[in-house]
Image (tube, rainbow, N blue to C red; front, side, top):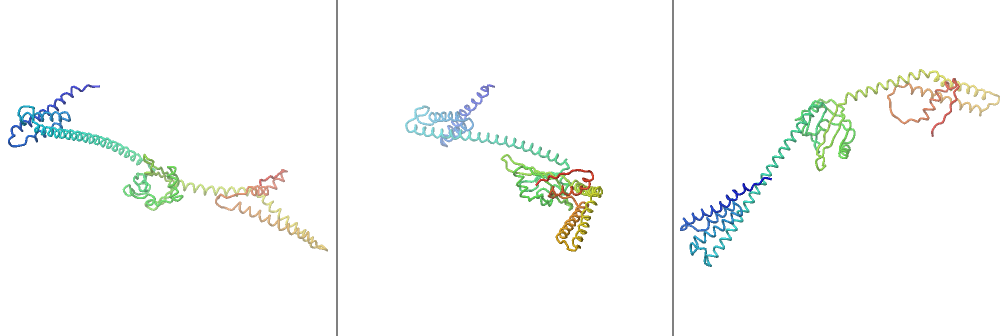
Length: 381
């Protein structure tokens, strides 16, 4: 801790010396102009100057010196410090006014000093804040330069969906320059097609702070692109939403490749079905021949039952019912074969697994019998 008393003493001497000097000057001027002017104004001025530049202590000293000078040099009896009662009242009034003048001067001085200090502090804070903002702007410019280096589409929109930043990747992707895009609504500029209503998407963004999905955008030249879009919500220190950072990756070629792959898979599935049909030709022929042979057999039996001396209508009716049942069976076999070889795109649908299992059983009956396999069915309800 450095002792600054040696520096403080000359300052004190200067302030109190100023009080003595101003009162002395006021005394000399007043004494020389005593015939032409009042005796008090210059002393008030001396007190005010001492209090203003020296402070409260020098101001009080000036009050005392001015009162003594008035009593000694200007109030009867002269050159004594024994004023009569009338002059004593004048000195008291002068002293009070001088004290008030000194107090007002020192108070105003302190107020001016406090104001100057506050102004200096404010200027310092403004300089610090300016430096912080300059640093923040430099950081933002650096980030913007980095965002301009990427080929991904990156832009920022405020809470009112107005574009505030548009990087070089967005210029190349959509054909709109930064000056043309900033200040516009991106959904209108790109004619965005959303996978869900926009209010629902915004509600999820506010709730979770993020959103991802596929969007359809229209470029300036009218061409349509499919993008994988990612939104990130930016909040201020109080947690209020202030902006949305949106990045978009062009996946148009990938979507086309996926559609081409889907088409190839459909072709392969068709080929696989045809190959399977070739391998099952013998079983299919057997399955078709079975109901046909049964129809012929039941037809001949029906003719015998009806051609007797006494036609057996009951047996004939049962034979006809078996013929109809076998006809339905043959029709179902043909329908299943047609659906197996029919070239249709893949689709997702509900499937009854029991029906599939029963169809497989029907197709493999000949193989089961030829290989003497004992098959037991136990289907779920």
